[in-house]
Length: 202
Image 1 (cartoon, helix red, strand yellow):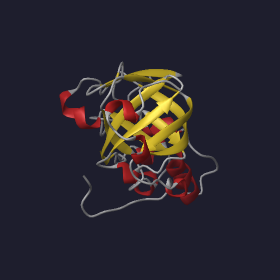
Image 2 (cartoon, rainbow, N blue to C red; image 1 turned 180 degrees about the vertical axis):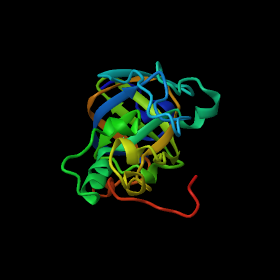
Image 3 (cartoon, rainbow, N blue to C red; image 1 turned 90 degrees about the horizontal axis):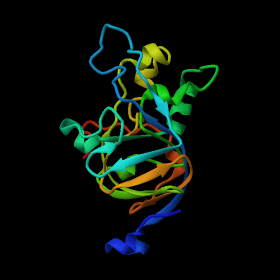
């Protein structure tokens, strides 16, 4: 796996803990399917599940609907733990796990507890390169989940809808085995658990 390591940027490597993960999906869509459409039905927009994407610092994923949008600079790339999606399917007794791309998060991962990353800088290392992120606010689910997934999915996804992040470096990410380098411990067994707070952080 390529990309400059933390020591090359003045961050001691021993301060970052390495967590093996799987990057399952890389979603890029040039248009919104749910946003601004409370009554009209989900829009039929192009959605691409790619093998590799280009990330630009401060802008997001090239070709995505949030790329370069000033209002989304602190949330240009969204992560989703697939374990959260699986937990929702179990909670609702669904016959199968729905397509996680319905959540329209950019990066769907397995083996990553996302909530502890809020407010921290971390790295995602793949075969295509390394990208550094800052974890931001939760990616809260929208009411559309009750219509496109199943009744009750909106409520079931609260506290585990994903994480919005700011990309801090340019790079490429590839689908497949990856390493998440974090300054805080992450417990993959908690990846599907809901985390609810009265006041979201940060």
